[in-house]
Amino acid sequence: SWALDYQLIAETCDLPSPCGPYGLCTPGKGCSCLDNRTQIQTRGCYPTRTEPGHLCQGKRSKHRVLRRTGVELPFKDLMVSAETASYEECEKACDMNCTCWGAVYNNASGKCYTVDYPIQTILGVRDESKMGYFKVWEGPGKKMDMGLGIGIGLLCGAFVLVGVVGFGGYKLWKRKSRVNNRFLE
Image (cartoon, rainbow, N blue to C red; front, side):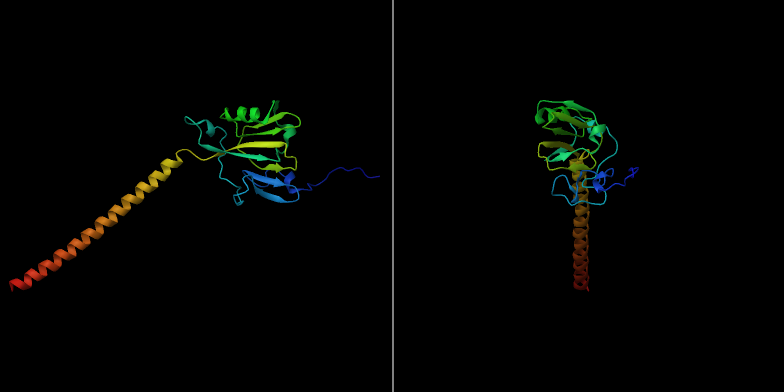
């Protein structure tokens, strides 16, 4: 009888981060995004930074939250977990910690797995009692960048308007001086 020595990976979801940042890999179905709305791109569902500490910058980190049921962390056996009484307690532990990027709670075991690095591919499972809480970084000064763009746009618009008014004034002055020159002759 033969003894199995090596087996190739049978499922795409067994690969490390096959769907990229904030991707959801469901065995037999493939990749989608954690929010079910975003179209998956070649580099994942959301742009992400690789520096682990940027959620701690500023007064309050610029992030929004994704919650999802039926999810599990890949290689969770290698992750640190803590027992919590509820999903809400698990979520609160991550929410109050700026180095936490997300948490997955298993309602059956009461284990809370926290993720201290940018979220990569999460596994989709049929067990709805496995719930996830994920922070999506939106970047520092997103509103400031938008304001800068609006300011530059308004400045360019003002220059164009001054140019049009100046050109119109010049043409009017030129026409008036031609009429005055003809009248004087």
